[in-house]
Image 1 (cartoon, rainbow, N blue to C red):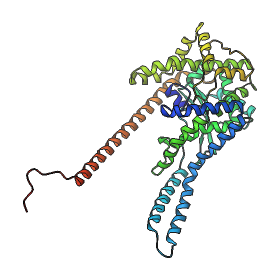
Image 2 (cartoon, rainbow, N blue to C red):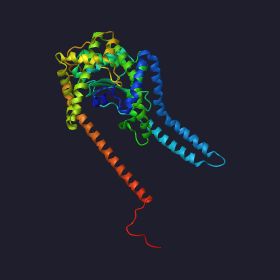
Image 3 (tube, helix red, strand yellow):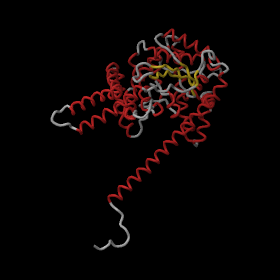
Amino acid sequence: MQAYSTAYAAGNDSAMPARGGRESLLRPIVMRLQSLADTRPRAYLLLAAGFVSIGYCCLLVFPWLVFAGGSGIHAAVSDSRAVAWIPVLLWSVVAAVSALASYRIIRFRPALPSGIPLDRAAVPALFQLVAEQCRHYRRIRIDRIVLTGDFAIDILKTPVCALPVWSTSTLIIGLPLIRCLSVDRFQCLLARRLGQCSKRYNRLENWLNQLRDSWPLYCDRANDPGFGFQPVRWLFRGYAPLYNALTVPAARLDELAADGYAMELYSDEQVLDAITTEMVCRTYLAEKYWPVIHTLPASRQRVIGRLHTCMVSVLRAGLRDDRDEQWLAQTLSAEPRWDDPLPALATRVDNIGHRQPCMGTLEFESAARAYLGTLTDRLPGTLDSRRARDDSRLQQRRDRRLRLTRLVQRLTDRVKNRARDAVFPRRHAGNPPAH
């Protein structure tokens, strides 16, 4: 699934943090895995499923170390000749750290995706649409629906316990997306996501794809359950980006399966128009909208970034007349980034049995009026105030981290100076007294 919050901040759909040296290392590996997934998808999926076990081992290694530490201590003190105190001390430290980390893992409860939660009484038409499509696909349950300021529609599964086995399903609907697309296009994109998570014939691909959103939760400071969880966070700080890179082909296979699910409820022409329009809008935002936002001063970025109507206006102005054909041709010829979970538009068009994409104009009568009603005019202000609070909390967190870093630096410098003075005492002025 797409990491919608990171995509909104970065200006693209990929949530991969790999940059610089990590990118040069992972890119050829991902390209080879993509070739394997294209030619032998079953072999690739089995390989990726084996890599999932490393994530579970990162969580289960700490309870195992508790028992290993107890066994090591017992073996060290059971020697009848002499007690080996150094192994006892080492195993005691390992057991204590692992026991605390295990306790924190048990207490781990990641936060649900942020946004404006919607109530059935406020938007009955939207809940009725979701319920009808869920009945068709079956084996899919939506626990909550939230609106965000992103151009995205996604379903995120948040673990409810230490292991990502049981989860809460959250349907993420971006306000710019539902305000920009027509009713038919929005229904097709919603059917894609619901069918994708039904896992009727993409069980392994969807499981691998969902974990792309679950593993990063364990290295997010916002989900830290308390002191002692740091070893777990350090492990997943290295494992989560690596897993997301190696499962890019699995995510693309899952997205292709989602396009097939949408054709169960809608015609292939409707699905073709919906996925083409979505990808052209994403390309335009990535090429025109976000580069302008990123070149503005920080204060101005916060203002424009909170005006969600601005994104819709920019899309409608930039894709009108004959410019939509220009951007359609550019999207069709573009190759996806090596870490982008979305396949190329040409691949998706061929996957649903067509040769050329098709895109109509962006209609002014959007799906927001049909499914959000009068909330459409009030929601941008609510999102603005919510994002302002989030920006304020983020800035406060950064300030506290900066103060803590400076304090640690001062203490480190003081310890270094005292150690240097103890080893190399300063010479006092004058000659030493004669003995």
